[in-house]
Amino acid sequence: MTPTENHRIIDRMLQHLADGTTDLAPHSIEIPSSEFIDTARFQRERQKLFMEMPQVVAFSGEIAQRGSYMTTTILDVPVLLTRAADGKVRAFLNVCKHRGAPVAAGCGEARRLTCPFHGWSYDLDGSLAGRREAAAFTDMEHDSNLIALPVAEMCGLIIVGAQTTVPQQKLENALSGIDAALAGFDFTDAMSVGRHRYEAAANWKLVAGLSHEAYHFASVHRSSLAPLMYDRAVVDTFGQHTRWAFAFRGIEKLAKIDAAQWPDAFPGAMNHTIFPATVIVVNSGDAEMIRVEPGLLPGESVVYYSGVARDKGNFEACREAFEFGGKLFEEEDLPAAEACQKGLSAGLPTVIVGRNEPVVQHWHQSWNKALEGEKY
Ligand code: FES
Ligand SMILES: [Fe+2]
Figure (tube, rainbow, N blue to C red):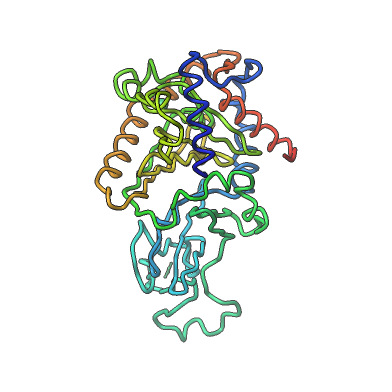
């Protein structure tokens, strides 16, 4: 994001506020409810969009230090991320080669990771460092190192393939088009302010859609977000990916001053959604990641929510912004998605996505194209 690009977005936003408009899609669309409740479709989504495609799972700043590690999961796959002494990020199945127990939990710094079951220990580069009674295993023909997963680090984001068969080239291309828009936000040096995991009784696409439109601000967030932010949208697409900017109330004051005096950072939030469903929210000094994925059934999803302070001098303010966003998401957004899921299961034939919800439209089309194997 360059200052020029930022000023262009401010300009478009001021125009919307002056005209009472917002970015619109050409048509409204209807989506069959089966896309949210059908089990066969759901299994295809899990396989095609999550198991076979790269996933943005963390900010680089969440494991910034050499000798640090963190764990997460992609669907049912336990994932270990490390940054060893050589500074390189690696990803592994968080699965001990002995009997399959996870070798690490949570996050932290360590020279070695020791499996809690029988005590095999591993270096952060994944190689087996030691095991008790080693003579009992000398007849084994293959190595006992951790199983490496495909991984890439770009724009201060860590991208992982949940299976060893995901081609590395797919990871290298995972941010194609949106990389320039993400550059310059300094996720690399940002400092972790927290991490939460939520489970929701709603299809993952309904949950992802919560971060794709502002139409619900005036009702769902009537007394929380709506008093702080306008619900006008400036939307851009970058191949499969999207960016949706919405502004703080008060931005209209910029219309009265020369553009040369405008701030270099957008006075509001920018939600960048990266295929298939990781939303990077960039605010003034902080940034949050909302990674949505399917649960075990069509009506279940899991959300990983993490935050970093880009402006480390304002760590506490960034932590508060992260907690505020998380509370809003958990207490206001997720219940709305869960209520809709019940309505869809009760027999609503289609859901409507208006012209004023272009990002929601984009993502349904983008997921459908990927399921059909169509290339961008
Ligand atoms: S399962 Fe890890 S040491 Fe046995
Ligand atoms: Fe919301």
